[in-house]
Length: 292
Image 1 (cartoon, rainbow, N blue to C red):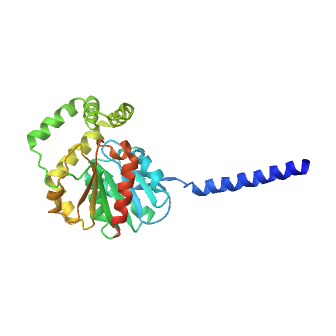
Image 2 (tube, rainbow, N blue to C red):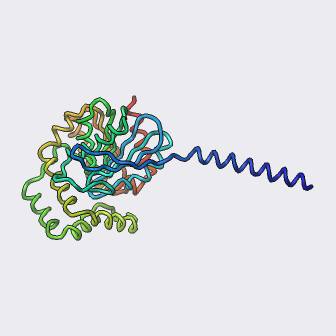
């Protein structure tokens, strides 16, 4: 009986070792590192997984790379995934004089070059949509597709100077309170209150000089560079947008024939967080379409 008990313990130990090794094999090591952007600002990023293409995730205004956690854990099973903190956001440096979309594009270029990536899909949320356009203009041979996330809704959207002034005046007076109010408008009435408050707190804690500077530069980009950029970029553009804001599919296709939009219902501006299962399915579908 004693020998049978020992044999059973040995068998259980071997089984646990095998299971432990299998679990270890399924884990993907996350590497956190930094690269220097064109202006010398340190850009932090995380990378995990293997395989092609590499998916690079770019957050939006006053956010950081953690906003892609639901995507990183999902897509790392099949692809190399990279999430970047743009300058002035997350762990990246603050030593920048002008928070332009072009400078943010250089942040992405710096990471792509450091990792020596050759086959890349850029995924950009909100302001990140303009950033990936600028990165693609600088890396035409290595980008195979762009995915906008609740962004790039209307290539010809016009904003008057009066509208711009009316919008920014209260932000300049009280950045924190106006950001709190503004972020709450980005959600639907059915959104998770805890999620709303988390994101409100995150974004309103951004350095005001970064928040205001980025927003002003983004509006300037929309007025003067946006249409030129989307026409210069020759790779397919697909957006995964919410139905909270209209997407001008037909108007956009006049300028970019490859343009596609996949619309998620029942979610607000942070669709990749609010309904990650649907979003991840649509992103996986989009990645496959870029190879058809």
